Amino acid sequence: MAKGKLVSEKIKLILALIALQFCYAGFHIVSRVALNIGVSKVVYPVYRNAIALALLSPFAYFLEKNERPPLTFSLLFQFFLLALLGITANQGFYLLGLNYASPTFASAMQNSVPAITFVMASVLRLEKINFRRRDGLAKLLGTIGSVGGATVITLYRGPPLFHNLLTRGSSILGMDEPTLKVQNWRWGCIYLLGHCLSWAGWMVFQASVLKKYPAKLTITSYTCFFGLIQFLVIAGFVETDYQYWKIQSAEELFTILYAGVVASGIVISLQTWCIQNSDPVFVAVFQPLQTFLVAIMAFLILGDRLFSGGAIGAVLITFGLYLVLWGKSKEKALEEDKCLKQPLLEDQKGDKEDNVVSDIP
Image (cartoon, rainbow, N blue to C red; front, side, top):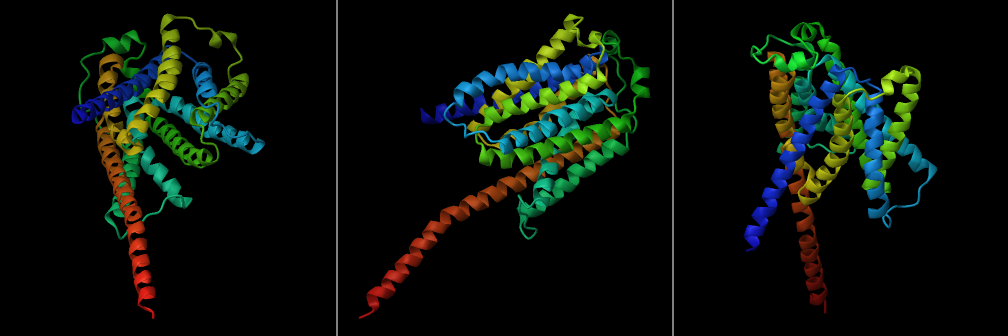
């Protein structure tokens, strides 16, 4: 009976993780559609973060009412910096990159985030690495593979792998093959690299903030709030025409609602549940599934093509991701084993000391 319940919980977790990757994949496509139909790159994240804040803040207020430490000016400033990295730079670079590159490569580049996070944490001495052990070598080789894959995607586009036979979707959404050819691909990949760097920096910084302020939903709400303020300030200089702020079609409304409700509200809740019922490493293992889903969706809906440089880079990044995750899991297992053995060693030491004392006349 207990075994059947355990299997049932495992199936629920796997289904939730697959649903999570579908939500992420859909966001890549929806964001590209939003750019194709002319939604402003500044107005779009303003609406997205406003909706996310409206959804998350009530849950943060009621669920974490007794967990929130007192707020200080220092903490508010750290929340502001979190928003600058995790919202403004992260989402801004993403939309700039997506404007020039494809959703498939945007998703592929995101697989390098764990490796970049590991490099940042190592530089700041938050992450230890032992080159004499297999887990240390795996993390190093995985990082090199991920960075190498991102470099390949940025510098080498290569010939297309498949001729696109489904051009109906691209013409409906205002995106034809000549438009794809004139895109500044390299700049798109550079912007996406900036997106990954800011995302990784946000995760490293957030880990230290969570130690001082463990109310996760409250931190997310404050991050959305400050991110919204920052984008509004940028919009005050960039989007002064009122027409850019008007929602003029059902497609535009759908993209904004998807970004706010699904990509922010549902995704955060679903990801939190998955991490609580497993661990961050197991959740991250499913990340490459998102790239596969995006490639299919982009081919069928947007008429995108997959190029050989992107495929090679995606394989390297995915291989690097799994090496880093394997190294992290092995390191965690060794640390847990060490923690379990430590009390036994201390008990044995204590027994020896007792015996010595008892032998003294």
